Length: 225
Length: 275
Image 1 (tube, one colour):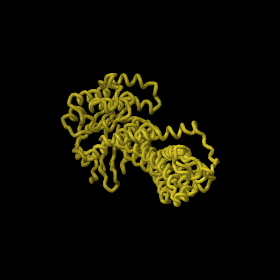
Image 2 (cartoon, chains in turn cyan, green):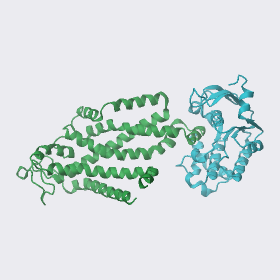
Image 3 (cartoon, each protein chain N blue to C red):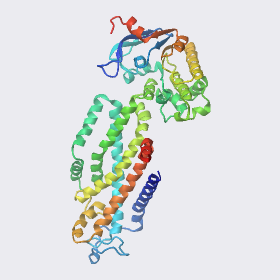
Image 4 (cartoon, rainbow over the protein chains, first blue to last red):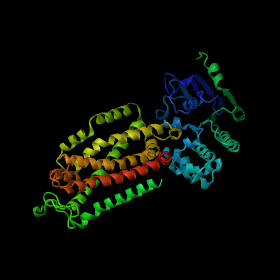
């Protein structure tokens, strides 16, 4: 279970972007979060992935209350989440070849030996050829780079996936392929999913449940604004 | 565009010639820094002494080349050390944030608040005259701008999604800094180092000119310009002109190279220039 309760978060404590929002995702289930751009859904996704410390509110991951975000969360807590961002260009270190990009979480967590095997397996899964794996981010397309970013998010076999507008920059066939990869992984691992987006058709088909940003605030936080 | 390429080519050629001269000439022609020849004092340039001789009859061409060697050594050593310190402090401040950032940056402000030539003079006067105190004095006063540049770069990089991805992938603070942040700021830091070389050369000359840098018998461009002041008033121009040119030309050449590098790092600036 991923429980976000009464989260208030933002980049300036006087003007929070997210105010008193609560959201609960059951183990293994997939929730789509719909909202217009700029409403704060990406910030909420960052809070959920333990990448942003909320000004107030609590995050409980599988019964384990989280005391801080980023490096203040333990490595186990952080790596329980695989995160895929909207813009693969910004989410990839421009100096790393795709193969290193995908293997980086394994190396960072001291599992260097598994890197080669895991990269080969995941590359096949997301549809990246060996030749593409040797290239750097500026030498591949957005879609190819996003495939690598998804592989990186899956390489540590996270219990939760946070996809923040994962398919917004992609053409329809790549989007469908990546969603299929996520769903395959979830079916096999039982991981839960928070998919953030603004495309209702896609989220309705992809997720067990789709919630609208406005509903989230009114329903789940009766104390209101 | 052709002008830019031409400037880069000339700068590179001059820099290469200067470095080669500074490295090779002392092997070919040894210099006894204490030797004087009063019979040949203050001779205007001739074929035997193309730069003329100084007030105690020493050949100015040979002393200028030796002086250049000292200047280049001070310039490169000081620039490297200052860049390493500045990069370390800037990266630490930017990556750690919070109180560590505030403490480190107030330290930078503290050093910056003292006029840097004054601080440099203070440092050299604590030691016996020599090359290393001069290097130390330049380092102490010049790591500050690099620290600021690197910190600003790190701060702007730190909020990129790829850093988020690394944090989420379990990377420690140290790994994020060493593997993702530092490689991204190295080109900027390298450029700052190259830009610092000419500046450090000027500092060595200034300190020596003030009589605070290298021992007065040592062939250094600053010392030579300093001791030439008297003869300049008597109308003897060469002891000032040639060492002066040896200070100016190499620094312009290195600065030209650094400029070319900066334009490569920041292509938008280049297109603005050509438009």
